[in-house]
Image (tube, rainbow, N blue to C red; front, side):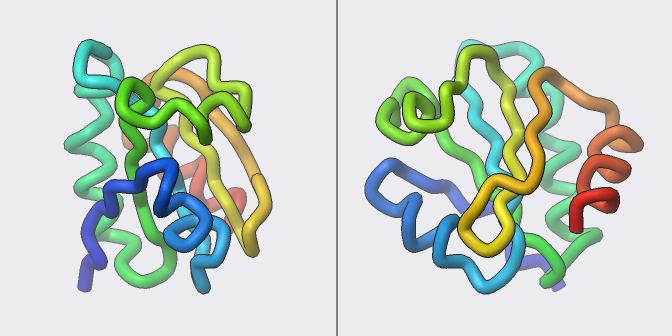
Length: 108
């Protein structure tokens, strides 16, 4: 069963991501970003397919600027996989579903 995509803010980042009991794939995105919109439906699918093995989350960089600055986010979409409160892996740019699946699988 899917936990669904969680929308994370600067205020909820520590609780939702760093203190999560499972890995979190955090997508830094913006409304005006075409590639961000392209991977949105893929992330929804992966949220369902991976179910409870991973939490997929999104953070709007226009509404939340503290965390993106902390992780030196320069381009979007940027995907960071957090495990046990630390960065396990990072990818920048829109990825195909197969690339995203390989990225997640190689880092879980």
